[in-house]
Length: 325
Image 1 (cartoon, helix red, strand yellow):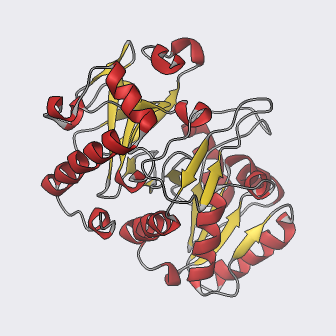
Image 2 (cartoon, rainbow, N blue to C red):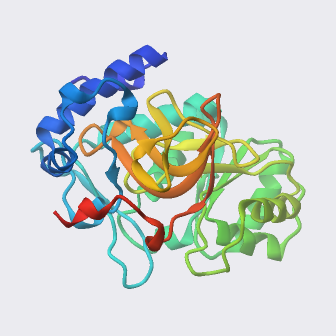
């Protein structure tokens, strides 16, 4: 299958046709996903709507090898997780698909990467191997073609000076950072940025107390002197990202779709406007699994934008007892 077709989707009919095609491919070639579908008595002949497709619980990436071909693995992305927990592993047999996905996804929402100086404040991700976020950020830094672009670990003083200098020079800056590190930065300096996008990627990772999005974004808006905080919605198990340009409302690129499932019945897809478990269709996951039931709670709106409102804890996960196979 020509993966360029995935990234040239332009309407709902194209998306639906490609979704059915990829479901059939993964049903036939992904042993773990096929076993899961068999246990649910779901066969491609039973699938009449996108909502009929089984969504694989994301925990399978911790316990099984999720692959839809026999090609050599080029990269393995791993989740950070908490100490002592089993990390998720996303085996990627064609890294060019991931590169196309995040490059075109970024361009879809933000335009040409060369228009930005890209600064990445991702200390906890840089301190370990296998981060898909670091892979993406590093590539965006390289493709920005700005000598000022780069990663920052603990040197907040140098980052502060560079942010102020670039912003005053009128250069467009994208600062992408993990939440706790962005909070660390604004505790040292009160900024008043006019030409900078602040994008948080979530995650306190045990460094700070968790806080609700509105509280976090208000602190960051005040600290950086900006009107909105942008956000990236991505994870190890996905090769595509959603983006928010403020208020925690995310949009997806045309090859990605968000649905919600009934919190009490994991196999039932809800209508838009109800809170439920987030299910993701990510067609860029063609070589692993494109149909993922995440542990996030959220809501999808009529215009297909969505927001994340929390997470299931393990006691709340229902309908996933098939994981024992």
